[in-house]
Length: 270
Image 1 (cartoon, rainbow, N blue to C red):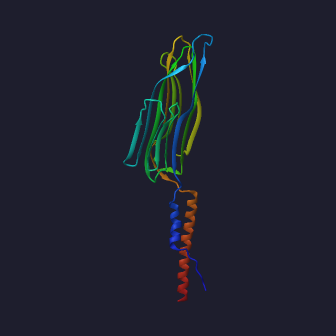
Image 2 (cartoon, rainbow, N blue to C red):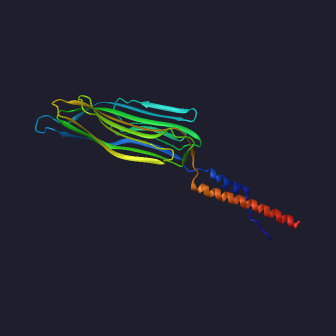
Image 3 (cartoon, helix red, strand yellow):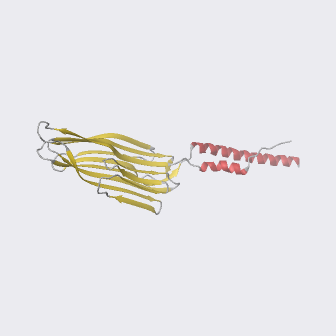
């Protein structure tokens, strides 16, 4: 008795369809400032003046927006008056765009998306602060901290050129009361189409010196932004899916060969 082991069509179809299962596609961007520290030095410790500084008014501005596909769009703008913690997030179709501040100098902007097949995304987040500081007479002030940027994309290909996939960070110290040079720090990343990611953590430091017999005003500014704009994406199949594709093709080929052999045997027996 001859026994033929044939793969059922449903199982073969399931193996073939496994090629349509993509890897988890992700696109993320994050940038910000953290661990902001202030240190003071008394330039004339022998006199009776008290060295130090005082925080003045602060101006803050935060934005987040997304535009997905042809009409899914939303945005939010926050301009808090007081230096209080701020955290807002927008979410839609697997995308999250947000900004954050702890109210004490640390702030960040970020986005993340698990992109759908053949969809376009325009995501952007910004956070900025301008803090005025009254610097006492005969006082030196040092401000420092960390600036960080992380950009990553995994299991994603692009059908069009990416117009902007970037992270920008800037900080500056300006002397309002004196004609002193502006101090500035800037860091910027922009990924090319074939790049998977980039990241950086850098320390920065500013110094303001007031040798005068009177107080002066300085302005400390921070701004961060992350953006992913104008790209159409498609997910890349996992390596395992390519293996399953090969298995599915072999199974279907074996099934066809087996059916042909059965047909020939039947014809021979007739």
